[in-house]
Image (cartoon, rainbow, N blue to C red; front, side, top):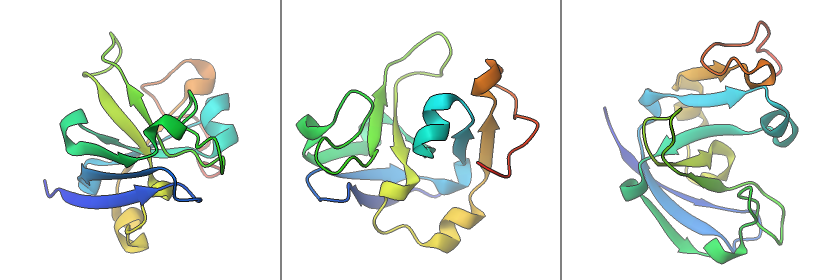
Length: 127
């Protein structure tokens, strides 16, 4: 496990954050209609490894910047289906992420479209 602190932001720069992430632990892509339509590719951060630096009040309910429309992050509460609270961060919002790091990161695919979240969909190339 090797955590690194990444800086992130939306397109207009109103929303800024930093997060301690371990890309070797993987990223996620889902085919549910919400993730599909916003092209959501995410990584999880522990709440204590995430710091909103500015503009958190500029985020809409789905983690979109109200000004530029970029999906940045969403805080997820602990629930029956997860391992506790976390912050779901769009990898596209990470400003200093080297593409080679992202390509090397494992990807977990989820079949949200068919409510089979713990299994990958039959087709993943489009995700």
